Length: 473
Ligand SMILES: [Zn+2]
Image 1 (cartoon, rainbow, N blue to C red):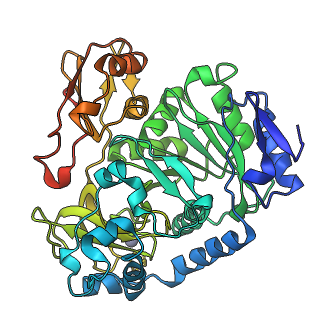
Image 2: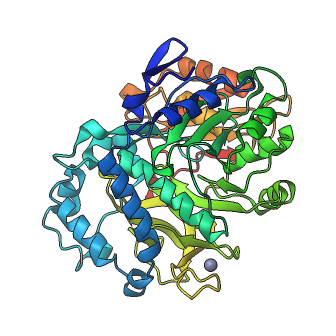
Image 3: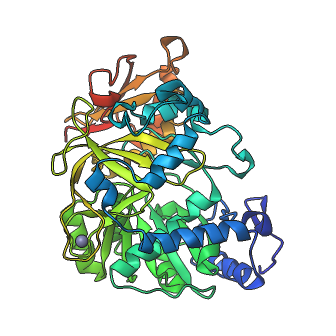
């Protein structure tokens, strides 16, 4: 199939030119090559980056700024850079949530440390309140957060915000000694998943000259025959692999022998032991990103492996103490983010629920951006079925997505039995307990599950943050 007009996945027609406006015949040919390979997985979706020519120039200039605007100045000052401050000032009267607090006329410079925090809970409860008046909502693309560490929420993005990921990948690869020359005869990356259900697709990346992007799920029923995932990886020859620690652990377990030039691990902090194993087996740099869907990439592992350098120049990171006041550099507390480039989700002191401290001392690797050190808080929890196989917490979050609730805590006891505590939006609208149990039946492989509702869940913790998965194993 090399037809430029549309592709058919499970009876759904996807118009290539609608999803990838700048597509060329050679890009469409690459999509066919990736999709039609005899060892290809079962595809269930199509995705395009929706980048226009104007968008592309914004993405490229963001990429240039990543290199040119690396300065620790705002951390020395203890307040966001003038560029970020100016942007936030303009947004105060435009964003409904900011008009309420801190208020349209609030003096950010004078009262910075009094600006109320934003949290994941705010996004779950009232996502529309952060979209500025007059925003071009026709350009909204929606991403479901994985929910590795919290419950899955929907994040609205703009194609430019989503595609600013690519110059950040370029940046970290170069910082780790690699210089990819992207083009439409190569596959840039395979995004590896190991979940019960996830999107699988093959597409091209506009800002990488039409290089391929493939998303796979390692679950065996998603492949045409045993060994297909390994064969397909070799045949596609992607420059780097991308995924989360659970997927990479599964890759090692399945003995996938394809050796990429780099592995980029996102979403959650990777345990040092797994990193070492991956490095030894795949013999390539293993680059860990500190990132979330709400914020995009925040920081990347220093090439000398000494903490995480702050990655984009358009965010400000501060560390909050237990009383909510900013802590001096070097003191450990909760990571709080301001700025970013999502026009539909401006971040004003957004609490990450992760902990670490900021080190502004110069680093021998040469990157002048400060480092986040001692990062922790989102290490994935291992849960097991009765037969010993692993349960991916993402699958639990995904199965719970259809229910309306604020946050959850899932606990696996020593005897393998499970408890789920949900904080409903209100007790009147709490989900049906039996439906929740049946939604999780498959994922838990028949383990006994008790469901409880608690309106006060998280009220006793800092910022209302709940540890979503707990294992007593
Ligand atoms: Zn460094």
